[in-house]
Length: 286
Ligand SMILES: [Cu+2]
Image 1 (cartoon, rainbow, N blue to C red):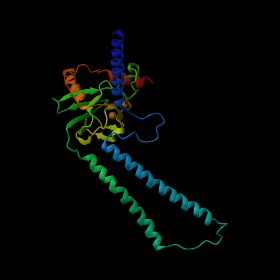
Image 2 (image 1 turned 90 degrees about the vertical axis):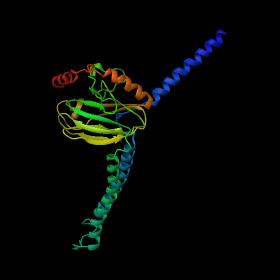
Image 3 (image 1 turned 60 degrees about the vertical axis):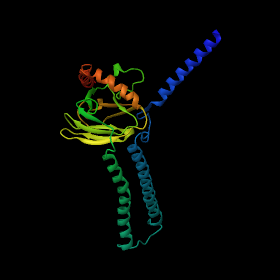
Image 4 (image 1 turned 135 degrees about the vertical axis):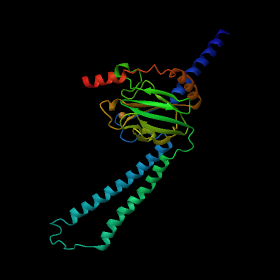
C-alpha cells in the first residue's frame, strides 16, 4: 500500500517537473547571440517576409559580385600589355551600352516590387485585435493599452548591480511590455521629447517615435517568449540604456496578467523614478 502511494507521488512529481519544463521550453528567448552573423530567427509574419527578402537580396548581390569579379579577372588576363600589345581604339558600342544601362534598371525593378509589397504589408494593420501605444522618453519607454482601461506604465532598464539570474545585461527592464502571442496587434508610436526608435529585430520592427506625430505599424508574435530589442535612434547621453523587453504570453495568461497589472499600476507609484538618474551618474562616472 505504502509502496503504491510512493509510486503515485513519484509519478505526479515527475509529471509536475516535466510540465514545468515544457512550459519553460515553450517560452522562446529572442536576442542576438555571441558571434551571431545573420538575422535573428523571424518571429512574426513581417519578420518572415523581411528574412526571405534579405536572403533573396544576398543572392542578387552575390551573383553581381561574382559577375563583376569574373569580368575584371578576364580583362586583367586577356587584355594586359603582354598578352595584348596592340590595344583596340574602340570607343562606342551601342549594344553593350544599352545592355549595361538596361540590365541594372531591370535588376532594380525586380528588387523594388517585392520590397514595396513588404512596405505595404508592414504599414497596414490587419484586423487589429488590440492596440499598444509606445511612447519614447529620455531615457525610458512608456506603454499604454488604450483598449484595456488605459492601463499605462513605464519601463526602465535594470542597472547592472540589480540584475537577477538569467536577466541579460543592458536588455532587461523592470516592467516588460506584456503582449498576447498569436494576436494581431496595432502599434502606435510617439515620443515625449526627442526622436527615439522602437526596434525589435526578431519581429522586424524598427520605427521612429517622433514627438508630435504618431507612426503606425503592427505585429503578430508567433510564439510566447521573451523578445529583446533597444532604442535605435541616437537620442542623447543614455541612448544605450533604453532596452525593450516584450514578454509574449499565451492569450489566457495575458488576460490574467492584465487583471493583475491594472491593480499594480493603478497608482503607478511602484516605478523606480530614480533609475535613469542612477544610470546617468554611472555613465558620467566612467
Ligand atoms: Cu531613445
